[in-house]
Amino acid sequence: GAVVSQHPSRVICKSGTSVKIECRSLDFQATTMFWYRQFPKQSLMLMATSNEGSKATYEQGVEKDKFLINHASLTLSTLTVTSAHPEDSSFYICSGASSGGFPQGTQYFGPGTRLTVL
Amino acid sequence: GQQLNQSPQSMFIQEGEDVSMNCTSSSIFNTWLWYKQDPGEGPVLLIALYKAGELTSNGRLTAQFGITRKDSFLNISASIPSDVGIYFCAGRETSGSRLTFGEGTQLTVNP
Image (cartoon, rainbow over all chains, first blue to last red; front, side, top):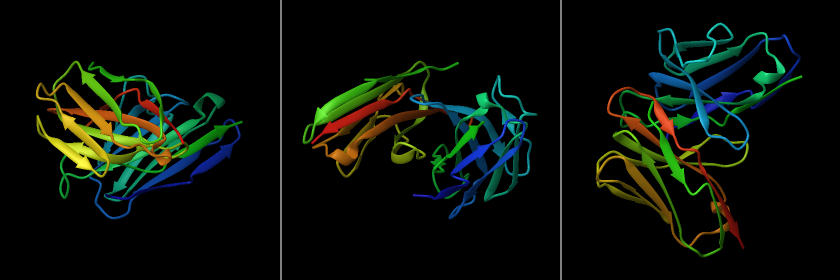
């Protein structure tokens, strides 16, 4: 299957700082990337969808000014959590999907980033 | 919005037993995907289904896309300890790119 990487895998930061998480598709071109958030023992919650070169589409209730998403190339998307607070602590997972190469709708996930805000 | 019910929520089985879990939706899907997630990791794609009635296997795993396009099941045969994890179903509607995820099935396999 297609490979997606995320960096960093874990990050601990102080309240009020900003954190950037990178998501890369290693062996395919991700025309669409998705960012999810997952709380312990819960399912994945979609935060936003981004297409390369376009502004991200945010789900209802997700603050676009707090969670900045950039999808500058077909292999890289970044999520920046701005002015992080303890309630932003969570497991953030990205996924990539391609418009060609494999059937539409199939998403391949990164390994996730554990964010802890002190 | 669409709802996707996954059951059971958790299962405790003995090694060697077969396992079955399923998902039903309130909407028609054109894609069903089954993922497995280990603790602290991202979901890994197990099986992808794209046609109603489709039955697909991946080793000891078999999944089917329901005829009504509103349900799917995943079977695991002869379970082993490394099957432990959370299994998620996910569906994609006929339009749009987003997936809707089930709540997950936590599988525990006792040696």
